[in-house]
Image (cartoon, rainbow, N blue to C red):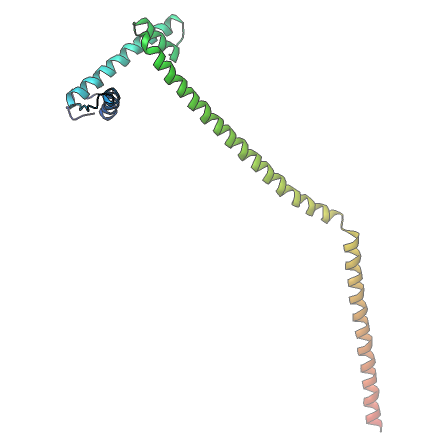
Amino acid sequence: GGGGGAAMETECDLPRSVVKRLVKQRLDALAAGAGATFSVNKEAVHAFAEAGRIFVHFLAAGANELCREGRRQTIGAKDVLGALEASGLGDLQAPLEAALEGYRRVNRERNERRYETVRKRKAAQAALDGAAASPAEAQAGQAKTPDPAAAGEAAAGEAAAGEAAAGAGAAGDGAAAGGGDGAGEAAGG
């Protein structure tokens, strides 16, 4: 609020900057055809803010009364609209209904976007979970039932390695024996 002192400011005061902006917007819209500009002094801003606060309290009391008559504890928008009508301000209902419809539309669209985002996120997560499970299942399946061609290739490779090792051992033994013969020949001759 403005700097008017503790007696003028309470927790329920409307923000002076918002009130001033609202008043200026309306005055500028009214003056648009006339080409005039208006300014609003601090005392007028305070008067508008106080009038707004009083009007909200008045409307809340009327809406509360309608709510009690309906044996409900929660005031709804229909109660506020009814309070306008009951207080002789029915001409304000149409602009308020239009504003409420805009509010509902924005909320509905926001909720639809949230739902769509959550749905897409869940679908992406499910796709990731499914993709992560497939390779793991494939690896588990290969470990349990090995590919016969791969097993045959591995066995053939092991057999060839074993034959080569045996051949090298036999050749080594012969060379050692031959070497021993050669050594014996050299020693004997």
